[in-house]
View 1 (cartoon, rainbow, N blue to C red):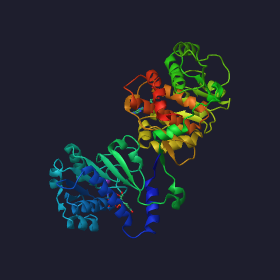
View 2: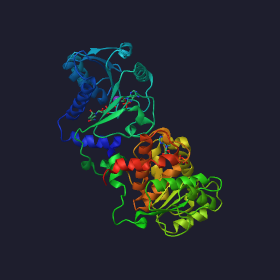
View 3: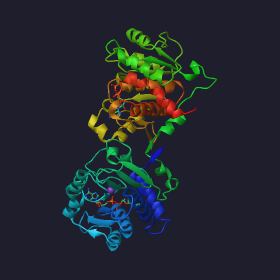
View 4: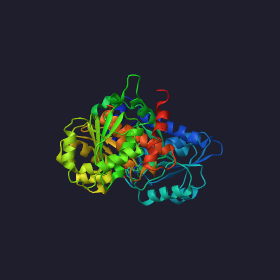
Length: 475
Ligand SMILES: NC(=O)C1=CN([C@@H]2O[C@H](COP(=O)(O)OP(=O)(O)OC[C@H]3O[C@@H](n4cnc5c(N)ncnc54)[C@H](OP(=O)(O)O)[C@@H]3O)[C@@H](O)[C@H]2O)[C@@H](O)CC1
Ligand SMILES: Nc1ncnc2c1ncn2[C@@H]1O[C@H](COP(=O)(O)OP(=O)(O)O)[C@@H](O)[C@H]1O
Ligand SMILES: [K+]
């Protein structure tokens, strides 16, 4: 699991570290690791060339010290001070004394297509979001040149704590210090960061109290495997979990069928299709093991494809009365403000549905997804999975948001949300807490989409088993 800390936390942890380390020690660790990474990517020192773009703060300092190390080892280094007259003085002196050549803006731009690598040390966690002026010119020219860029701490121009793709450098690799930053895991910002190397510079999160808690946990495939419920010799269909589905409608029967596909191929014990009669018939025709008679249910999936069903509010209240975990999706979300929920209830909006729930615009949600998902979880008292290119899971009053394993844009198609509801429903029925069910379900879908050619949701669901086999190995 990759842990992500906020700028506020990183600053606090750095303060704590300054008090117990020699002056300059943290920057030395950071710039040494940066130099090592650059050397690895350059391959060798003889005849290789590097352009260092250094901003006015410590981010520029890191870049300059690393440039000094490489110039000292025989790499041909050019250096450009992005804000004239404002540059890390000791780093600049070290870099130029080691043999780096200073160039102006035009000189830097003309070198871009000709050097082996560019170091973006313009701004780091002290940067204002969105490059303008010369910074933007440099970033655009670097991207146009096609020369690989290593960004120091983060691509200059991005807001470290945010998901937005502000005008910024585009890195092939980002060498980041102390902790990963939110912009490196949240889309669309993350795709500007390239490969991420997190460098341990000796920050002690436990020494700064509550601020030491991460803001995000980026799940990896192994984390999903560790949580996935695996049947044993003592399992039966009830212990594995029964999912009740009231999804779809005469207008959208497919939604109910797709929920059942998700649950069936994620490996649930039993599915009861207990919504509209035409949905139950269609589901049975597609998946013969589905039961249409009422009976014991350990978790419900409701709301996908309900359309403007007139008795939705009553049906939702009835289901909530059964006091088992309930996943509320799509049209079911309209009734959320009128019912009382708890953390075992899982809401699965996309950005538009979350905006409607919070009575804000979709653009506001997209600008600050973390703030809005926290608000929804706290306001409704339920666990929330916000769907999209990044899939976020928030639990009421918890600082740390879980992020599912990312997947490709192929999943963005009608019906993916329905199969996802089914997968998550099967995990709720198997007894996983709502947040784990959400993040494991979303990750399974993303991992499967990443491994397969583009497939419609019901066909993708049929490949879940292949992904699970790969994840679980011999378990
Ligand atoms: N602290 C540590 O121990 C360690 C820190 N480390 C490194 O330090 C980095 C943070 O350093 P930092 O605080 O100096 O901020 P940094 O990002 O270099 O820039 C701030 C300057 O840029 C200016 N500025 C910003 N945006 C601008 C814009 N769009 N256009 C124009 N100007 C703009 C801004 O101006 P101001 O906010 O004052 O208006 C200020 O002058 C961190 O990312 C990591 O790389 C590592 O060495 C490990 C140890
Ligand atoms: N750009 C994207 N990249 C990867 N996954 C995406 C992207 N956009 C959406 N998704 C995922 O695809 C699914 C779409 O769900 P949803 O919007 O509810 O579709 P529908 O309601 O049509 O079934 C969700 O799992 C979502 O997280
Ligand atoms: K940078």
